[in-house]
Amino acid sequence: MSNRILFVDDEPKLLKGLERSLRGMRDQWEMHFVTGGPEALEAMARTPFDVVISDMRMPGMDGAQLLDLVRKRFSETVRMVLSGQADKDAIFRAIRPTHQYLSKPCDIEELKQKLKCALALRDVLDSPELKQKVSQMEAVPSLPLLYRRLRNELESTHPSLREVGDIVSRDLGMTAKLLQLVNSGFLGTASCLSSPQQAVSIMGIDNLRTTVLSGGLFSELPEPLADSLAPLWKHAYTTAQYAQAIARCEEASEVVVQNCFAAGLLHEIGWIVLASTCGDQFEALCSKPNRDLPAAKQEKEIFGGTHALVGAYLLGLWGLPYSVVDAVAGHHAPSPVAVTGFCPLLAVQVAERWSQERYGLGRFAEDDAMDPGLLARVGLQDRLPVWQQQCEAIEEHKQS
Image 1 (cartoon, rainbow, N blue to C red):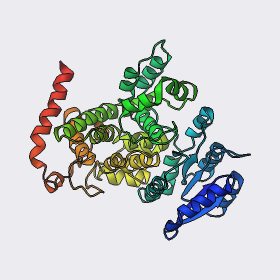
Image 2 (tube, rainbow, N blue to C red):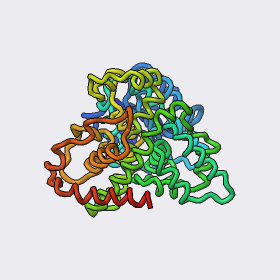
Image 3 (tube, rainbow, N blue to C red):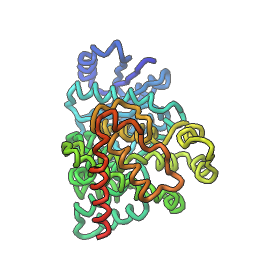
Image 4 (cartoon, rainbow, N blue to C red):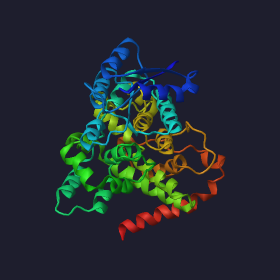
């Protein structure tokens, strides 16, 4: 299948420079270069594109307007901005319709890597309809209690970054959206972060007020749906704590430790996406589950994909770290990626199983939350007692 990429910029010299720099990719990508939004929409109406990457500041139709129309008309297309735009209002307008934001000047190798990852996402989900629904999501709704706590803190006279960070680190939707923003160039300098607390620190109180209070970028789940999904939040946060503790036992780098926490927190985000975008099917699955079919097969039959792959697809679109996306995709056995040593995927599989055993997960419980041969294949089976001791210490601390 051909990989089709559309570049949009009103500066012909810049387009020529991109064309020269990417000449070595012509055997893998079919690239088209146009100088404005109307021309881009005409090209997309003639032939579908996998990725559109647009400048922000263009006469007539700017990048935010173009990508919003692409979101509505060609929702399967991955939407990126490549811009030197520094105006904060314009940048915040671009947050909603844009999957990833790259700042000019952009290193050509970074651009290639971002595009390769975006194109690889095509194979994560088989259902075009499900891809469209996930791609159109601007944010993932939050648990009402946490959403209201965040608003109250940001509206207070002296909001605390530490308190905001604690709230965000307990919520799947808030964490995913903030990591999207700090891992793209929305704030001027792209990072490679998976820590919710660090994301809050980089965003700062003023930017958080803009996105949360004025921009309305976060939202809360309706109460009946929130009641149904509430067990996921406790399970996800516990899994994140356990996965982080396991990583520290292995003396992993701080980057890996934070990736383990983020992957544990976000591993069930696909359920919230499915509940928000496929309401009737989700209600049918919850009210009349087929006990004779494996859970993953039921999900694929009803939705067109599993919650694990839906979550990975969204987080991949949003440009989160690859090891986090891999862990979300593979948190149920068998693993879709090659595991050669300790990694977030392994930590999350172990942590998820122990979290379920301790607290349960009701209708969302899975029987296959651990690949039984994974630890043996990487020579870590003897580490289980040490990891379990650390996770039990977390529970003892909660009770003290």
